[in-house]
Length: 210
Image (cartoon, rainbow, N blue to C red):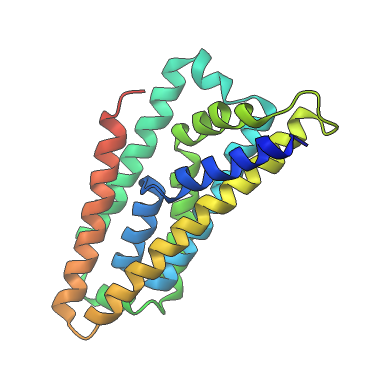
């Protein structure tokens, strides 16, 4: 494994990146506001599992494809952006009876958030680029463990730390909707606020330069 000094730098830098508000945290919070705390937690789990796709890709060197084929990067980015916008619009169009989902006990909603979040994370090429650009800074080619295994171990640690920040966002958003739950009007506003965040994220991703 890398030296102790390198590992300390790795943990410190990862913690800073993990707890700076980013798209994944906003996405988890939006799902919580729109569908309840349980859906937010399952969304965070889906993002976490989707992150392992990028960890494996970084270990295999597949992320280099995004640098070598810019068109592929743009295509995946736009697909992810359109998917986020579609999710946000679908929340705006949700029927009134869907307000019950805010209670966080609707299993179907939680399952939907789980699978949607996996798709969102897998379709995020910036996550792949991040792992490919960030992890090599802490890889020791002369260490006992092979490079691919170091990628997997360090990538897993990064994914866990980022997911801890997502869960924290879900808890905070859940505390907010608990206060607003008695009001059906507030519930509709929270759902629409979650939809607005998702649409905003999609537009941001689509317009953001590579």
